[in-house]
Structure formats: C-alpha cells, structure tokens
Amino acid sequence: MSYSDVEIEEDKLRIRYDYPHLHLHVQVKFLVFAPAFNSLLSTCSPPKTKTRLFPDWAHECNTAGTVKKVGADHVGLLVYGLFNASIPSDQLPSSFAIDESSPDSWVDAATGLRIEAGSDILFQVTR
Image (cartoon, rainbow, N blue to C red; front, side, top):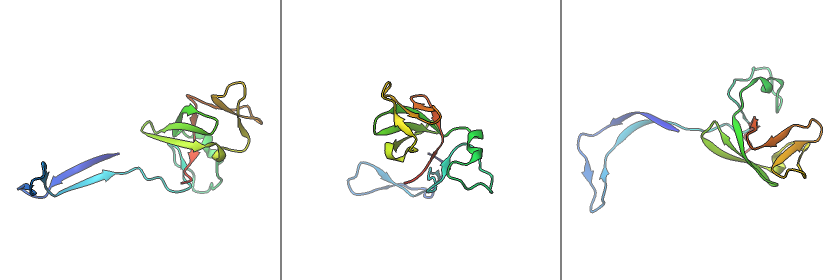
C-alpha cells in the first residue's frame, strides 16, 4: 500500500552488462495489506469477548466495503477505498436472493435489507 524510510545502502551504482537500468541495494519499509483468514473487515476493533461470525458490535462499526457492482453471481466492492474485492453469490447469507424486479440488487427476504450499488457493507475474509 505504501513505503517509507528508503535508504540507499551504496554510494556507487552498478551497470550490469548491457541492461538499460542501474542496480543498487536499498532498504525500505513497506506497508502491506494482508488481512487474516476469517477476519471481519471493518474500521473498528471488536471487543475481545465477542466471537460470533457477524457479532452484535458489527453494526456500530464503520463499513469496510462499498458495493460498486451487483450481478446474479457476485457482488463487487471497493475495500477501504483502495482494493477491489468480489463476493461470490454462494458466499452471501442464504437469506439473500437476487431481486427479480431489480436484477442489480440482492434482497434479504426476512428483513428487506438490500445490497445494491452504493451500499456499505461489512464482510469476512474467507480466502
């Protein structure tokens, strides 16, 4: 995602054979996005005592993903405003089904909640 503290470890650059670039050793700190398996992506920290899949505290968190595209077989979203992600339809909660009257959204039959372009959602990393 980013880098910092770049240090060039040599005071001379090397030209290798007839390559059109220079070779030098550097030391850099990288910030890498690597969510843990089964983590719930959000912008808040869960209480240590809650362990449910979509815990009660989740509704108090800011969302991690904004839905950009909805299809019959997936939901595409932008995570933290930086990364594209896709949730296959078989990974959505079983109560959700594609809305026949508006194929650009998924609707929860029990609650009426909709997943459509512009929706903000919390989700869990499964792969």
